[in-house]
Amino acid sequence: MLVTVLVLAAVAAPPAVATAGAGATATTTATTTTTATATATATAGTAAGSAPERCTPRRGTTSISESWAQRRLSLSEVWELTKGAGVTVAVVDSGVETRHPQLTGTRSIDLTGTGTRDCLGHGTAVAGVIAAAEMKGVPFTGVAPRARLISVKQTSDGTGDVGRLAAAIVRAAELGADVINVSVQASDQADLRDAVAYALAMDAVVVAAAGNVQKEDGTPAPAYPAAYEGVISVGAAGPDGARADSSNAITPVSVLAPGRDVTSTWVGRTYREDLEGTSFAAPYVAGVAALVRARHPKLDNVRIRRRIELTADGGTGAGTGAGMVNPLLAVSAILPSEQVALAPREAAPLPPDAVRPAPARDAVAVSRALWVALGALAAGVLVTVAGIAVPMGRRRGWRPGIPGNQT
Image 1 (tube, rainbow, N blue to C red):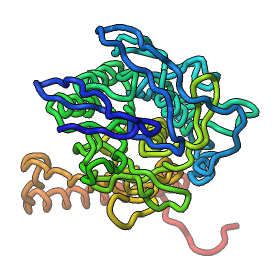
Image 2: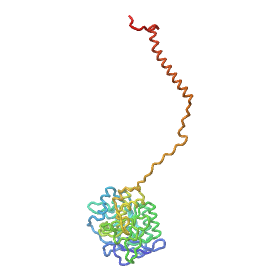
Image 3: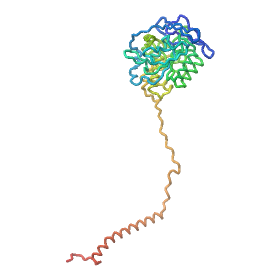
Image 4: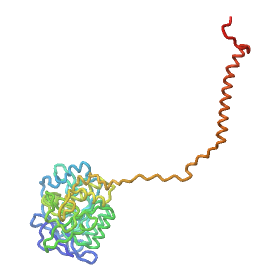
């Protein structure tokens, strides 16, 4: 099954099909659209491991304002609770420009043989949404600005084979990523399915773009890996919180996130303010997952996904899932289902011989004891009387007393 989409802009000719694993053919594509009419993309060389022929992504800007998405998600309030410190997020994409001042701490790994440089800008923008560091005087900051980033480059020109995408996901999991963002849509293949299952088994939270509507043949299809069980599938929304028309409603959606007029970091140490598509909605949710993992480190990936879905704003209609993601509630809500109440254990019954039975009452012994006690009392009384009478008798010479006065 072939899957083709627009990559950052309209492409004059369909991308070349790359051979995927398991003997099938498929392509992976960045799930992004933009208002631009054209953009240059890097074309991979024909020889394996060759450098790209061109690296001329569209220019960005150095002048930006605070994005609606940052205000809509109340990130400043969330950062009072957590900024994602201690959590690692892997960006499986086109690379990341680590020279950008807000992405300098990113670790880069290349699986394409073309180097770690981002010749599309796509991965750099995705990484910025997730964890662009705070910078004085810059109104844009990533959702989890203190999370660690790992860039796993699986494409150099916006397309690629599913086998390499699967390998990139596995590599991210092996590197210990707590969250893996995949802003890519591909066809369903066994190696990709197995890679996602492996990442989930490693307790990584896998977040993927639900994909954009494909208009070439008019037949939308579910995007993978977003459609796999256990993955947080993200659709795109506008400022009003409603699903964007370009967001694929065929893919099962977990939540929505900002996917129109998105601001983020760009190559050349610049920014973009016109990014659109589920590619840039997914990293918002990946950032939220990082915040939740930092705030609730004992939760596994299943409970984190469930928390993000249960605390969303609520959605209506196909492709909206639980609605717009709500970072503040996702981080701070108290969910009864996570507070496991255990009834107190009933005390175990005592063994039959734990308490000795009272001895049978002996009436004869009781009677004898009573008479002995009475005898002892009588003897005591006699001794007391004798102790008083004898001295008095001795003083009178044992003569009886005479009533009246003696002269």
